[in-house]
Structures are given as structure tokens and as C-alpha cells.
Amino acid sequence: MAGGPSPNDPARAGIPTPLAPLETLFDATEGDPLPLPLPLAELYGVLRFPPPAGRPRVLASFASTIDGVAAFPSPGAVGGGEVTGASPHDRMILGLLRAVADVVVVGAGTVRASPRHRWTAARAFPPLRAAYSELRERLGMPPAPLTVIVSARGDLDPTAPLFRGDEAPVLVVTTRAGAATLAGSDSERRIAVATAAGGTSIPAAEILGAIPPRPPVRRVLVEGGPHLLGEMLAARVLDELFLTVAPQVAGRDGRSDRPGIVAGHALAPDRPMWGALRSVRRAGDHLFLRYGFPGERVSPG
Ligand SMILES: NC(=O)c1ccc[n+]([C@@H]2O[C@H](COP(=O)([O-])OP(=O)(O)OC[C@H]3O[C@@H](n4cnc5c(N)ncnc54)[C@H](OP(=O)(O)O)[C@@H]3O)[C@@H](O)[C@H]2O)c1
Image (tube, rainbow, N blue to C red; front, side):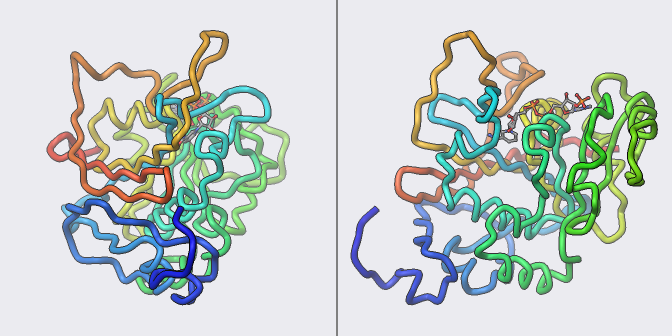
């Protein structure tokens, strides 16, 4: 990125991080701007969502390389940092999306890949903890979104830090078999479980339908991984995708699975799903894209 002081210098704007503001290249989003505290407004620009449509808006956040690799399932490289090059802008945006989400939904594979993580804004990007927290206060939201974990088998470590529930409440959506596995796990912890009818795959409508309606749910953020996103897209329940494109080519040699952002479902060419570009932001060589899927969604439940 260009060096030297500029009017957008984050130090001058009082941003508590050395991050440079994102450059907004295109923005066709609609709705009233959310009341972002100054550091977030300086870094991100304007964040809008269309007016509520009588149901929660379902968002997804993902990252991919130029050639579409979203995960490296090799030991020591399963986190998102290898995909994005640990881009702080990617983390900052993820924190912002978590900060405006009532619920964050993750698949069990993603939880197993990052067993010590908590799905809160502050954990995504700690330097902006105070700004995220202020934003949630301004929006009248509780301190952290509900974390919903989706698992058919219930193969989760109940001693994992997220199940302490001290940073965010947690709900596991699972099958009857999964609930039995969790109940039988050797743990003192009582884990909140919602049991769905699905066998090896719980339909997206059931996952969304298991979310308690109180406090009111305006935005649900799906953070993956690829199998969970595949289910959400195939069921046409996704409203928007926030996609980070990292400027690296990862390649594939067939020796290990390197999934893209969607797994478990084939859409095109038989059931194509075309997005509408809503915004494009840039930090150096990273791109931050926002796509809407108008008219694709069917009402869950
Ligand atoms: N690039 C990115 O933005 C991004 C984002 C998130 C994750 N990732 C990466 O993706 C990798 C994991 O990929 P993944 O596809 O395995 O992730 P995943 O979708 O989180 O995990 C798949 C597992 O989640 C459960 N699950 C998902 N959808 C379900 C449904 N509809 N019904 C019932 N269970 C469901 C199942 O758990 P059970 O096996 O317990 O039944 C399934 O085996 C990790 O390396 C992670 O770091 C990348």
C-alpha cells in the first residue's frame, strides 16, 4: 500500500489499530446506515442492510484464494489464516459482521478445526473490542451473539472453551443420535441442545427454525464451513455473502481435499445461483466482495 501520511491516516482518525481504512470501490447497498462508532466508520465506511422483511436476514462470511480454495485440511493449517494470509482487514470485517449479528451459525467441522475459538466480535479482531461492544449497545443487542453449532453426529468436545458460555451463549442443533452422544459425553457441563429431525444432514430451515425468537433475531451470520454453507445455499435461504478474496493461488494436486466455499451440494449448471454484486472494498491486494441473492430465498420453516 502507498506510504506516507494522508488525510485517511488511521492515527489521525483516532483508530486504535494501525490498520488503514478500506477503499470502497463500489457500493450499491440499500437501507439505513448502521450507527457505526467512529473507528469502524473510518475503517469500513458505511454498512447498510435493506429494511427488515419480517424474518431474519441470513448473511454468510467466507474467504477464498484466487483459485477458490477455502480450507487446507492439513494438520497445522486448518484455520482461516492460511487462506487470507492472516489479513487484519478480513478479521476486522468479520468482527463487524459478528458485532451486528444476533446469531452466528457454524458447522461442527469448523469448530473442530478451531477448538479454542469463540465466535464473538472481540475474538475476531481484539483491537476493536470496545468499538464492537459500543455498536452492539447502540443497536440494543446483548453483549455477544448466540453461537449455534450444527452437528449431525454430536461429535463435539464438551470441555472446549466455547461451551463455558462465559463470552457467548451456545446452542447445539443436532439429531437425536447426536443429542444422545452429547448427553453421554463425560462432562460436567450442561450443553443447550435443540434436536432436529434430520439424519446425516439437518435441513437449513430446521437449523434456522431452532433459533430461539427472543431476543429478536434480525441478522443470522453463517460462518461455515463449506458443508454448512452448501446446505444454506442449496436450500435458497442465504440473503448475502461477504467474500474475502485473498491474493494467492493455492493450487490442488489431488492428494488432499482443498474445498471451495461450498461442499456437499452441486448447484450450477442444473440449479444455478447467481449473485448480485452489492459492494467491493479493497485493502492492498485483498478484495472484500458483498453479493446479494435476491429472490433466491425461500422462507425457512
Ligand atoms: N475459508 C473460510 O471462510 C472458512 C470458513 C469456515 C470454515 N473453513 C474451514 O473449513 C474446514 C471445515 O470444512 P467443513 O465443510 O467440514 O466445515 P463445516 O461445514 O463446519 O463442518 C461439517 C460438519 O458440520 C456438521 N454439519 C454441517 N452442516 C450440517 C447439516 N446441514 N446437518 C448436520 N450437520 C451439519 C457436520 O458435523 P458432524 O460431523 O459433527 O455431524 C459436518 O460433518 C476447516 O478447515 C475450516 O477452517 C473455512
